[in-house]
Image (cartoon, rainbow, N blue to C red):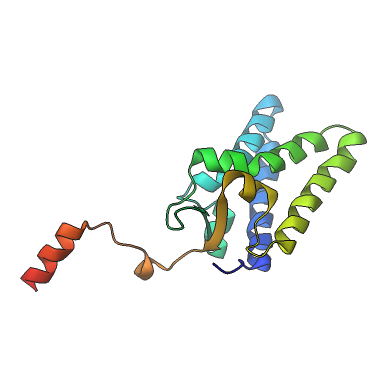
Length: 153
């Protein structure tokens, strides 16, 4: 599997960042919980695609089964580092340094890895791949249904 395009990943990340900013503007604890919840669950919302990844044409899949989208468990594990950076950033001075350092570490690992995996991907055993166009998506037909269709045609 080839390394995913870092430019596309950055664009998807920026779109998701804008969503986190919007959610964090909600009042008090609701905004904090909505933002952290979105950060943790975003890659499981749309069959392995956060809204940003969907717009850019990427998806998160399990490394063992490259066609199986990431579930909630994998999304939480792969994004725990981003949630920690967000929470750290809320701590004056100390967090303003450690939050960006955690994000920088994620980026450097992804750039340096052969498959473009970041720390969260390694922990969750996930990988980002280009989303296949609808015409190339595997069909939901069972092998028996395919055989029946071939016999009829």
